[in-house]
Length: 162
Image (tube, rainbow, N blue to C red):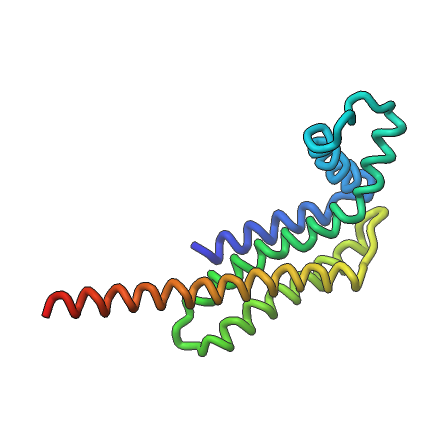
């Protein structure tokens, strides 16, 4: 099941990367406008040009945060996919998760070379991979914490039965 979710998320990323530059800017711009209406006092009273300036000033950080977050989800799904392979050592499972995310980030940027107005950015590969690595690390730590709690509960339960 997790493999299916991983593949669906990769298809989602591919779809976003297939947007030409104008479509991609419109997607992030409409997201920024939605947040600005809520968090930017007086945004609705600004002229159209002023609103576009506000939106433009947040474009870069929004787009890079989206890269980081979207690949964070990819890292989490990749972790879930590989963590179930018990025959592999934990370090191998984590390495495979990270390798899949890195390979997909690289292929995604190469894919953008063939999309109108888009480019291949090494910086984006780094941002993508950092988002994936953070999610994999947090997932692994959380998983380990849950296992300890579960082991403690089993131990306490076994002691009470005796």
